[in-house]
Length: 465
Length: 94
Image (cartoon, rainbow over all chains, first blue to last red):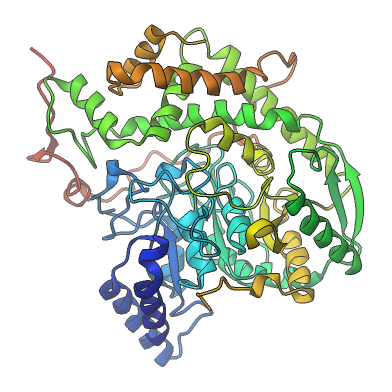
């Protein structure tokens, strides 16, 4: 209980300034902590018993408001637990609070939340990244030892990079999406943000595993991540895509990334250039597929069964149209409309099917590259965290920044971001590592080896020590 | 590029009310996104199968047995309007 209280106190002191949490319920949290203490007293402690975990607010947790950062679900209390919530509960962990996020996971800056933007603990003028911005900020500011997140186009890796924490997105199908409110069903995957690769390994062990309730989840044994993590990086071949280091990559990011690669070489890794010829198509392909799937997934929000309903309407259609106009923010609406268009009669082949074909080509590029290397490394983002409000006028500008993370989601590969230095204005830089399918243990091994030889991941933002 | 009429049509399909005054800005933003997306349309993908699942999994089936418990009241607790276990909506049939 002391642990839970300590974190709740920190949240009470710093939470408002960062706006990292949408819901905190000390009573419920302490009740869970009390039960955890009882288990410990009975000798039934597991590694995570009593450990407080923050959860991105799109994981349904029974009895907790689950808002997805949206007005549509602002007062909705989930009647059941997501697989991820159940898994942590079974492991004895304690639910610390529901983390702020871009609405329905759509965004890269956590400026799209109905509950207000999240601030980057390293610089209150900067975004923390998104859509798991609250999760990342909470871990960076040590308001939570770890947090769950989701990653559809980079939403764990990019905020981890922007806030100097370690984030991991597993292979598609590794973690059950049951109870994880859907944005783009073929791209979404639940993962974790924590202070180190070691912590991520422990947490992934809890989250991973077959669940029949998610029909896209893969029935495959879970690796021993903590054991595999100790394998080190000696002899590992690191692939550097020749498309990565272009003029679009800020110099203050390129420098720590190249430094990190040198560090990995010093630890025994070798480096080889690889080719991802369809890399430049990733962002356009994603912004067809993700909005298309979102338009389908979010059609359930119609004011009938849950959430917001407009107060004023003449008939059923007006009820739907006004409810959705009021309940969704601007970015969500844009994506639903794009998605509706690319799936509509006359456009489906030219847009959606074409994008799905290109998706296969993008995935093949990675499979080819993995014949020559074990891990692909590079930046997680083309710049450090930018200022709040600086990309507000043109959605496309923000989309283009996802160029390093999006291809991984299209291919369904696992990816991590680990802190590797600082760039302009003292804002963190993250090194992205991409593994082959199911190769989380190897990614964790490289990350862990790096973190044993360096201390970037131990830095905390000024004022939050 | 989308005209204002087309944006209105799409909004109707999506069941999202867009006030007329907001249409031009919205159309501009949507056209910007479609401009980004257009790059991918010209690429030759003859002979390539569409990919919808990263591991090309096909739908897993299970036995046709009822497995869900009856939690109707709990699930309906968060609904805007409920009566006798039914979700209440404006009259549809005249």
